[in-house]
Image (cartoon, rainbow over all chains, first blue to last red; front, side, top):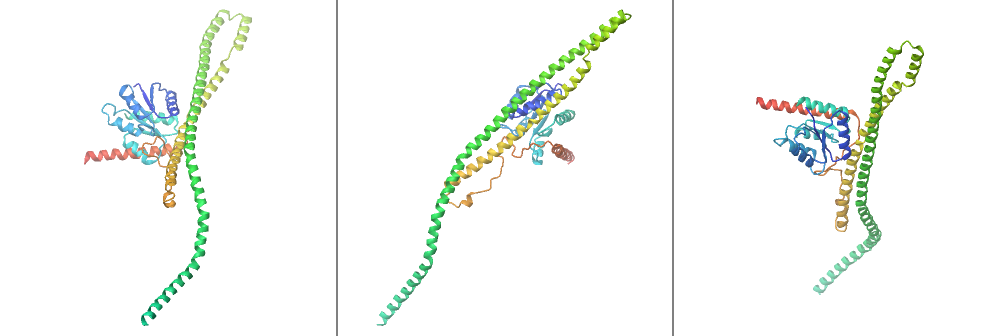
Length: 125
Length: 254
């Protein structure tokens, strides 16, 4: 399957780091968004996007709200979502899982962790 | 006469009361004087505190603004570093391409060598010169070493990229500090307004860093590269997922 990632983070630095990591892992196809709202618009406009990597804390629409919006959308609800965030407390992780993110990575992350989580998600889908 | 006697008695009683008041007054006057002295001293102090709070409050938006500037400047600097890292990575790729090109030419060179050997293998002088020429032009070992260095340099550059995650984390920490400054500023502003009519102690409350609803920062963000954090996350993810699937199974059978 050709993977097209949507990388969502309000930090330009983080978007570049995630994208560089994806390139390093051999994934060349990606688009990016600075917040959940922009991400949702891009998802609705581009049906070739089939993997979302999102931060949690963002202006306009958070990653958690984005996850809930995707999961409640009849067309988009099957897209795998990987949350990459600084939020490491148990309540947050459980809340994200209850919103049905597929997996959770804590910042700062390593490419190995990113690879492992992407592969696990793909294997389970 | 009896009535006059009664009135006099009442007058004396009142005079006695008055005497007691004077006696009490004699005792209380020094206290009141001390109180007045105290007030004379404390009022400028309160005014000074008030002025200090007003001044500090006026400085807070500036401090908050400076923190925002630090965030945007570090983001700019980080972008510049990332640009530079990308540029060097591209240059290393170009160097790698040059080595690959040499490798390709080397295989053609080996083919030519084989042809010459086949045709002129008996000419020992020519063979000796050819061998010397090949040795002088053989950069294979050097290029293999270069390639090792290139791979290492590429890895090191990528590590720099990964380390720049610190910028995102510190910007969230600074956003949390900014939020704290704004909260203190708000409290102090209301305190200044009410300082003359309310109990100061009631107005000063402990202000913790609590992210408001919809905040785009994590007040607990930290740059911690220890593996244990992700391991802890994985543990919670697995526990929660197992719990959820068990709940789903239970629902099916209920």
